[in-house]
Length: 112
Length: 469
Image (tube, rainbow over all chains, first blue to last red; front, side):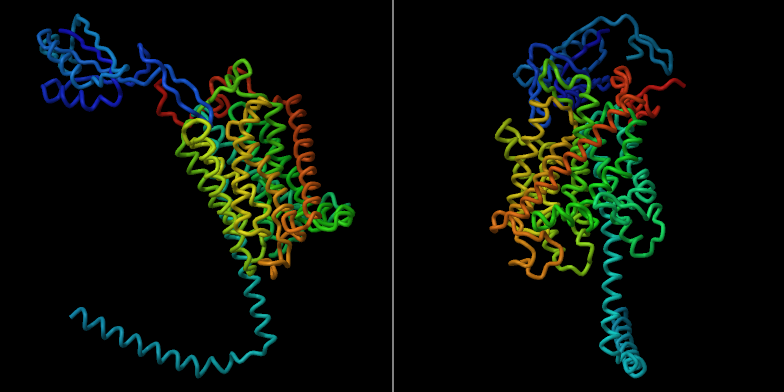
């Protein structure tokens, strides 16, 4: 089992979610996060004065899948979250040691 | 079926009405053949009643401005100080009502002493229906001055110190200048100054009495309380964005609505046809002010700035408050445009040159544009009895510079100087004493935590917190 953690543009979440849903991956956890990568900050203005916001709002999406599905999910995210411009985000893949469903106590593969 | 019965009904109602009017004419009409004197008394009573009702209504419209002030201030500041700002504005009104009843009214409209101050009618002693009516309309103006100060000093001022200041504002600072201008016997409208210049000072609804007084008091307060932590870095102003433009804009529009009562009611006579000119001029200046600031910020930064544009509308309104009953429509637009330039330049001047932190722009909007409004009377006033003001009863007496007069301009300058010296001077002393005694500013730790939790024990938005069960 692997956890895929994708940092994506907030504007892309619906598209990514719908594509994953269509492919049968319904379970996701989504968090509003702020961060920065290679993308420089964006300029905003308040009362006629410009200022740079260099920690940008992003969405962190977490999804845990069986090992054989990792490539498929990564592929879906790559296809739907990309705009080609700087700031599209990153995908991280981690191994998951154990999964337990709180309601039933099922573990690992059964709990997915 | 339905149609027929309705037709029948209509016919029956028509017949009944006809019958009733015949009966009415037979029995009542002969009795109403009144004399001319009786008629004129009845008309006069009706006119008095109309004024009383209009002033109660206009006062209610002005009262709503406190909601406007609250929302503008909240919107332009951070979530952590929202409950504190709500409480400050709310208590300003509540204290204002009681204090203006006990002391303020007496100082402003009580029997005159030397043109400087009123000395009776405290606690509205000896009041009648006429005075109660006037008190209500004047009272809703009185607390406004303190509310202006609250916005400029937001996010770092001690709540207790602010409350004490508010009491003094409504009891003394506001009514003393108000006595000079609006009591009819004060130094700016009668006595040696007026004799020397030739005409009286004119401030129709309070560019000076309300807005300049609030604005320059705010200047003293901001100077003494200092800027918010993080507002200036190496002498350079850093933006601290407010948390809700929707609230700021709603508040601005409520304030504009409030001006219907503020200026519209200030003829103090519901039978004065020039009320309509007042309203038109008021809103022409408002629109012009906002358009002007939008264009300035668009040119300066490449983007039209929302909160400054909202300030632009208020700038136009504040400026036109003094001249609105004495000028033509085009003058109102010019006054609004210049107010827009002044509010933008004023906000930048305060931050870049004076290094003052005024989160809502109150000093520029109410102080600088208030002064511009008073001055504009001396420039654009048609002069009572001239041109479109031929039948007017409440307008600036003298013609402005553009119409060949100079006296009105001179007395306006005297009034401006007195408003700045009085408001800034007395507020500086009061804030200094408050700073020595109970402390004007909250501690650094409290300021960073936010005044909501520290001063009131509650966040304005508590759902965002995770609480211990």
